[in-house]
Image 1: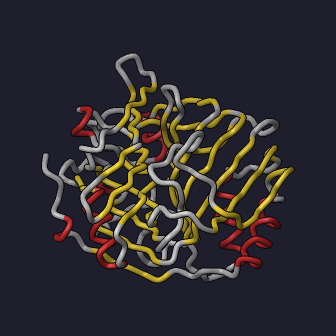
Image 2 (image 1 turned 30 degrees about the vertical axis):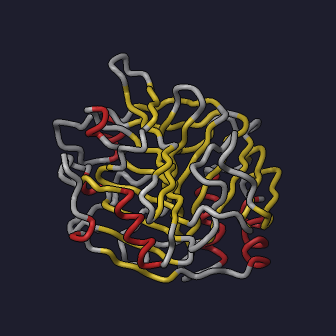
Length: 322
């Protein structure tokens, strides 16, 4: 199936608030200590994320940091709209031209290219490209196999289609200063990303802040879901949704990619969305860790300068966004 024409999609954009580094660090340190026993927050020179264990498609997260959301849960639920098929490379290139970027790194979470595997799947997007047409893909998809087990597959560079919905952190993939967050031993109820988001939202009230990047689950296990093939019966409630999804406890190491924003900004945004992959067969949608006493997170994030909302659903609902 051919992807929708990117030029025919509605692109809406908004400038994001960029906090002072010192204030941001203090807000996150105070907030994260309410949920984790050990916390460190610093701005550091971005390590080489191209190599292990992160294995991103570019070395860094810097340069024209942009938060991107396309589609939305209403295109999946209550019944799938299969025509909502996008070309992620074309979306990134359009933003590159508008932001005067010659290259990009796109990492994030979304519905995978069902056309590639003939099944609904999770997308763990991790690709680099540019105006020269070259693409490096370290993206993955995760699906539920015939035995109801999780199967992770690589997505080749020749496949840049993505379905239904996605949340992408876009940058030039350059090195530079990034936000490093390290946490161990969870003492509260929030997951790693929720606590980051709520810490920012409670301190920077009414400010539109977006972060994106990657984190490593170094120790412990994470409760994650993988979508089964598209439901033939409508899904209207969270209970019906959770019956359809397949949940697994996935062991470390897991590398997650995605975005978070502090509020919806009148754009019907998903507040947080991260998918992860492992060197073995695991991949899926991050919910929370299941090993609070031993869990350890190490994350690297860029501060979004601008947000793009693409093909926002005209009719919306609020379930299926956890």
